[in-house]
Length: 132
Image 1 (cartoon, rainbow, N blue to C red):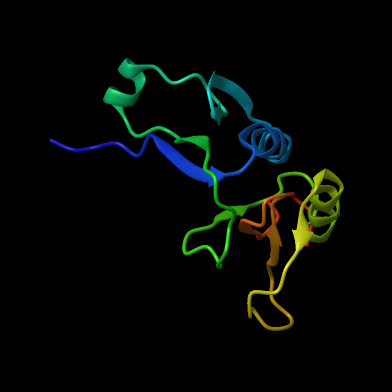
Image 2: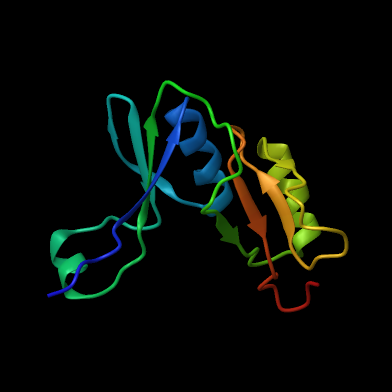
């Protein structure tokens, strides 16, 4: 008997805003909404599909009353598929992300950013054929 990793849950003040941001970042869509929560994914999960094999998790944004106060212990890494990391960072800043310093030091191959509520994430290696 095993379990499946089915959702990554992110506490936040504004689930709609973060869902919109991450849908634009990842080309996901909203798959479910309820009071104070929004779930996004790249696919529409079914019980049968999840039981049959490991599948990509969905991301669930749940409203909480408190704001973020310290550096996340868990973060997402994203890899641009058709542009370089700097170009992707520029695109993400236009969506509301910011570059942040969490002590990573200079000259890293990844870019540390924060979403509109301050949750850190990294833009890592590009998957584009000719990007650097």
